[in-house]
Image (cartoon, rainbow, N blue to C red; front, side, top):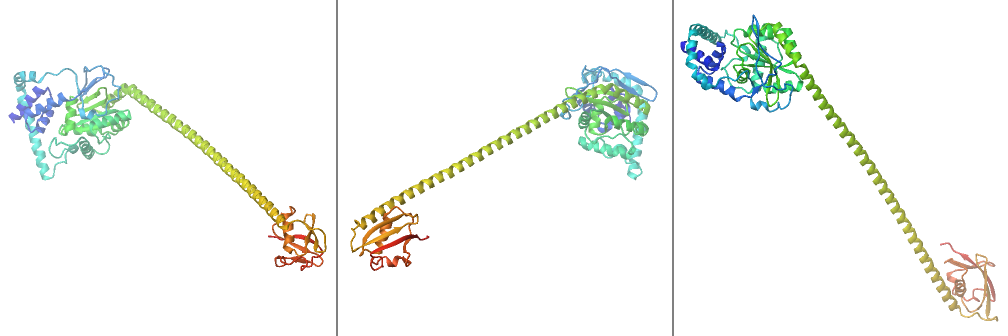
Length: 484
């Protein structure tokens, strides 16, 4: 027991933490390995980025009797910046810098003096440690018997068991709801940096609660203050809430980053520039609902212009994006309309060209047909002319009038009459040759017919002589066209 008290005193002297319960929990989480606990505490503090706090906001530590305002000095930054928060989780979370802390070498040099000055409190520390150990043993014994509680806020299992940030958040939310009921802040089941990004997207502040499950003031604070209906409703309406147990990895890191020295511990933060977070308000120790509500209302009022400006800026950006999208859509619509009109123009032009080409083709075909018909007609006319000439030559000269000649009169459908003398020994075919030699008939098929009596001199009778056919000494015939 004296060894435990000695380690607690040395840990307090080196780290500067005054809360013996918190030091006891940290040492217990490291199996009372003093060197490992100091190394973890200092390395966590050195490797994290700096949390900024605007100069117009103070950090408030509240207890049951009074409120003490401690002004911390921070870099003069603009907490309204909501940029460059993405990717900050890989760099760790910030720690509050009120003044430059003494280096580890200085702490080790002053360690003997601190131990001597702290030895005066060994007796009270030993008594407190004995009560803590006894309580732990009793709690463990009741747990083995099945009579103990299931553990506050999901703290069953080995202390500080490493879990992923999201899994730790889910475990904490489930345990907190199991221990304190459904009327509570709606803690997001996300890692701290994811919760910070969510608050940034919703343009709200991030309410942070660090849960110390073994601290004697924790149950009363959670039941009467944090989980009161008014407080829970106010936090859920105005903040994005994140909670973590200091006995888990991320909760422990956040307690170091925010320099939590008393519990229960609450804080209000927001994203700042250069991968940092701005600490706007911190509330440490037991706090009544009225005191906490007043502090949260004040930080909301002070941060309202920043949040409104960020929201208006985002809305303006979204409006510009929408305007560009509408302009792009209008441009695309106009472009599509112009393209459709151009396609229609081209289609109409192609249609007219096709129609013109078709009309030209038909005209050419008609012209060729006319030329062909003209050629055929000319050829036919030439053939007829040759035929007439041949027929005329085959007839020979017209004989003079005499007893052996036959006078033949031929009447054509046009009313024209032709008369000629033939030898009576000539055949009826010579009469057809005579008609063919004349340019009086365009029909290709015709018959020579006598009226009284009516005799049609067909193909069978063309070989008869004029005398044999009864056409001597004279005959009157007319041409009768035969339909094709």
